[in-house]
Length: 125
Image (tube, rainbow, N blue to C red; front, side):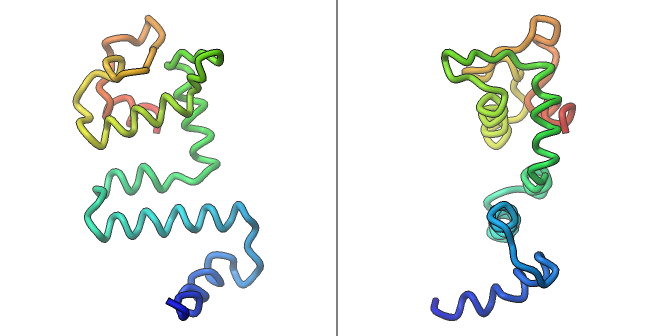
């Protein structure tokens, strides 16, 4: 275990293009490595890996698109981000269920009974 950093240094240097990584860079690199390990170990599918690999900028865009469909309640702590996390967790279990049937998810009336979880994630991705 003591030599792990020497194994990681080429990855760190390549990702940072030889420069020092910021805290945000480190978090993004950890996110990428976690996804690659989970994919290699069979813990996630290729689709899940691709969906999870969206960077933080892409994630912000996804959250913005999801906000057009999801209702939030700041008093109860329901945010677009927490709702999307519930939907993504449901996709890992069974993406064929209707998104509005996921516990804790409230959609705008105009889009109720319209998307399965997988269809919804495809729509906002």
